Length: 389
Ligand SMILES: Cc1ncc(COP(=O)(O)O)c(C=O)c1O
Image (cartoon, rainbow, N blue to C red; front, side, top):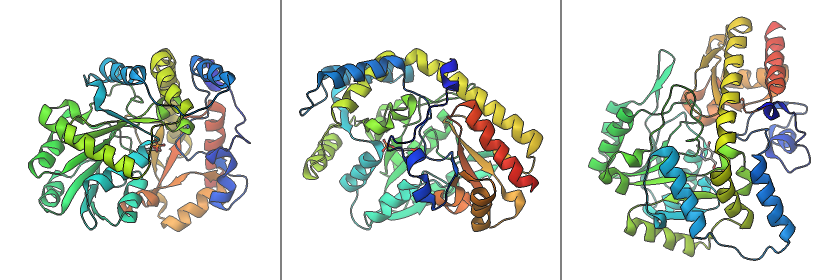
């Protein structure tokens, strides 16, 4: 358990967070608490399996095997109550490229795709960069909790040009783990109006105490056939750099269309270490994951208590899942540029600015708490000092 307290120097590992923050933020000496990976080592056994493979020394072409399919199938059954056929899985080198592939496979130029902002910003980028049109069904913040606006959604799904909805569950950045009722209402509207659901469940193993995650595909066979589910062990076990993910497409015709598109673009399965990463993490990682969740919950309690006591100007939107915390700075009445300058120049922090997630994110910041407690303490102290100045 205490291994999560270890401060690991991640410099000189090509880390986006630790080697590229200066460049990306165009500022020096910011404490990076942004991009969604963790500052922890992967489970020991996963490291061992990868080391053995590296020691083997031959890195020729590789492909997932029946075993790779089975470990994903077992994980979904054991931890997520979803029984799938092993051949429903298409392996990809990441969830972002998989979503881009889905947009290209199932929609055409000028079709409309729904998102629910504030949301993981590559969703909007991928839609727009592929010449599709974003239709936003913004989330609504009510008494500290984000809700879906179903009246608005119902109006928007009726538009025949709307062909797809990108669901984020757990939702990045607001931390909601959508309930069965919410998912059922959303899914029924989509099925009724023939809107394909692409469900990004990449954070689905990171569920905080008292909450329960539901895969939207498990709600009914009709919904299952109308959904593409994107999962990966990358967030769960901190192996995002291995770029390996599994896309579950139960409907045979849709799966063929998707595989055709992948072939057309020359997109192949994950690399040798990515494949092994999936197998090792889902086979050996469960106990580590249970310990990780306790550590993350403790970090969240620490952050919540610290802010309550020392920074009452900030409101913590309590996450139900993920290790990302959405902080409301609107009481400062700064515009988003002023807030960004304050966070970077005064607090010396590199956070994800709320506005990048959509209009409703203005006045918010996203902080990543998947770090040793000492890093979290340091970051919060820097924030407090900036306020006191
Ligand atoms: C909701 C969501 N989807 C996808 C990704 C990235 O997926 P990948 O690294 O597999 O492309 C992230 C990373 O932060 C994310 O938060």
